[in-house]
Length: 427
Image (cartoon, rainbow, N blue to C red):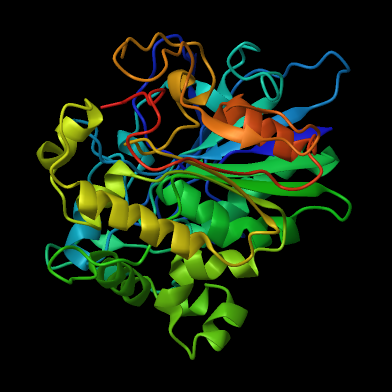
């Protein structure tokens, strides 16, 4: 039996996506999941800021052998163009504002949700996982499903806030166990953005909740947020994460071995570059070297300042961009023998949730570039099973890694901008 858990994400419905309604998970007093906010597409549960029922969405079961193949995908955050995402809330005020919308309560979440990319049931788009049962877990706790605070906070306006995202995760897993996860033999935990970070932070936790003998692997899409400075020398991500950790009391829930090795600095253990060394199951990091969310929120570059780079017309901030890429590759160093990597030279954020950036053929008419391509973003990749190089999509790399079609974990790292003409923009 196969159970694919793909984690947190935050994208709009995509053309040709299968639309799946929300199923709500009734809050359980015994689990302590009540009085908080969250939801996952496949059942009814919610826990974190405003009281409501969490929820999840699920595609139909499909298997030629009759076995259950399940993909649970945590819906995370994105800010790109007109699509504003969840991220994290780092103050009582910001959390109270979240509680009034779909990032803070299932009351406001839209249904149905589109399943596409790695959640697609189209074999031409998603060849390795198209017939897995897919579960999409909605994000609403503001701390990547990591907090577990017993006493609620009250905002100045009287809004009662509950920080219990970790209880959501446990309640979702418990509910999925009752629906087939307990019989699974293979599980893939994944997510995008805040959900990609959650995948890294909770890979060990999920393994501890699964039965002995279950094979778990974890895929983080656009979740590798790095601690780097903007041109003014300000470490914006570090300040954000420090405030999130403090408000949500994450020093009590983050990996305690990591915190001990970091001299008690829990904020370091909210950064993937530190936490990746503590993840025990196999981990795959899918990321753009020029991650658009991080360029705007970590490097403090406006979209307008690098738009011309995307169109290949000119690129005024090229030195800043190459410096960011160098910082990301440096943060990825260490533990390379066990990590699987797919780092392309695109300006994007979250690639596994879109058909176009996952594996669907796509016309690219940049005729003036060195080559003309007709597929989703690719990088040159050397497979261990052969000595030949060929262009490979994220879907192909993830499939080869998950099913061990290569002798060693794939580590596909693109050349620097502007070398890849296959990039597809989402905004």
